Amino acid sequence: MSEIILHHYPQSPVAEKVRVGLGMKGLSWRSVEIPRIPPKPDLMPLTGGFRRTPVMQIGADIYCDSQCILREIDKRHPEPTFFPGGGYGMPWALSRWTDTIVFDLVVSIVLGADPDGLPPEFAADRGRLYFGPDWDLHKVHAALPQTIAQLRAQLGWLDDRLSQGREFILSEPGLPDALAYYLVWFLRGRWDKGPEFLSQFPALEAWEDRVRAIGHGTPRDMDASEALETARMATPETKENADPLDPQGLAPGMRVAVAPDSDGGDPEVEGVVRAVTRDTIAILRDDPQVGSVCIHFPRAGYAVRVT
Ligand SMILES: N[C@@H](CCC(=O)N[C@@H](CS)C(=O)NCC(=O)O)C(=O)O
Image 1: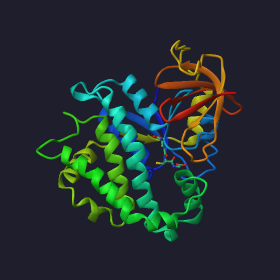
Image 2: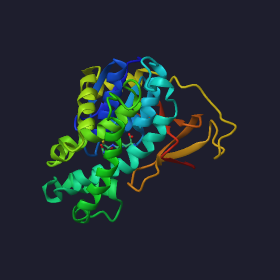
Image 3: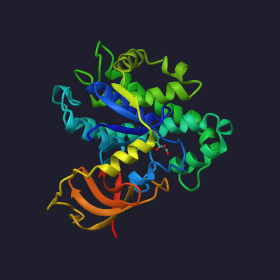
Image 4: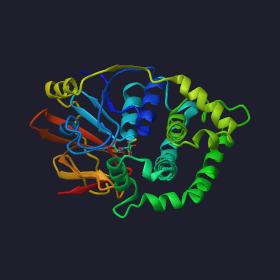
């Protein structure tokens, strides 16, 4: 029941971040492949409507967003640490740079490089998700030189950090490496000029090889139906938790709706607060297919509304 089940698809860059995290911990895990665009009928009963990738399931506890997933993996499997050299806290701050500013630049390049070459339904889905209701991939394409200049400067900082013999961003492989690696992986694999662009960063490329060599741990395929049955048979393990300092006054038992705070048109997930902390919120919901599940979200980057 305590197996890690990752719902993802091979091409997903954010899932690659988590796969590398699983590799750093040397973990065995189960892999459920989900569709790249909605509908995702075998995922929705677990997430209550959250459609982003990846999602981690452990029994009837469901972890949405790589931030929440990696935090939980580290909690359950503290060694080897994601925070070598006492680097607590800093990697999460770094993630607000990698996962917003740098991710947006990389997505603009990957999707904007050849808008007419994308499958139309994929372009429509990702256009709305990443560029808002007025998305226009041809405008994104026209802005590419400026976008690439922005990314070049910022990847240059990582290259500087990795110069002078430093093998990883901290003293040993850790969370910052997963946070930066998936962006380089995405750029190299999905932009035809990616390899040429990246060749100007030799220290970054050498580090990329080292992070790739860490691998993904030991995944074993699982059918979506088995994952649903696992949730149905399990009971959420999250204990009730209140936080008297919660700035929104959120408390166990309240009905809330949770969604990413970006402008991507993500649906809200409704449920009853089970546990609230500075970094996470967990809500309970009942689903006709899987019964009671506890769905976990990060606080940073998510909006919680009392309903
Ligand atoms: N903040 C989220 C972002 C997740 C995200 O945007 N993932 C992309 C794929 S890599 C996605 O959901 N794309 C749409 C989809 O898979 O339906 C996280 O860190 O998990």
